[in-house]
Image 1 (cartoon, rainbow, N blue to C red):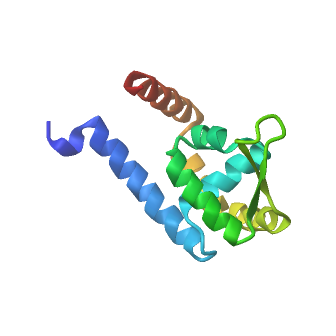
Image 2 (spheres, rainbow, N blue to C red):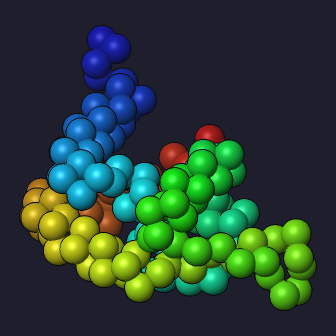
Image 3 (cartoon, one colour):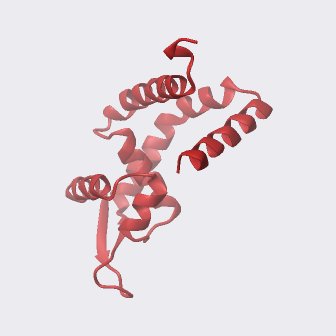
Length: 139
């Protein structure tokens, strides 16, 4: 077996291929894939605290903090102190952030469609289960 035939290398190749394609799509809007993920998570759970946002993104808290600072400067998100814990910051999409996310979702629909069409429903479920098993095994 060559290195190219190992699970880590195939996962890496698939991830990097998807990441490059998505980066090119979002660059047109001055956004990155990670920023798109952040906005998408926020849309599903607006007002969550910054640490929970990091967990849901499976990302480092410092990285998320830097992204939030940049997105706040662009008026895409806003942060407010939590009423329950003044040390915690709750994150919200601004009106312009919501409009931007809608554009990004429309713009990324082709990527999503391509991924959906690449596998049969059964193979997709098998892949999803396998990815969950890999995540659990490595945690």
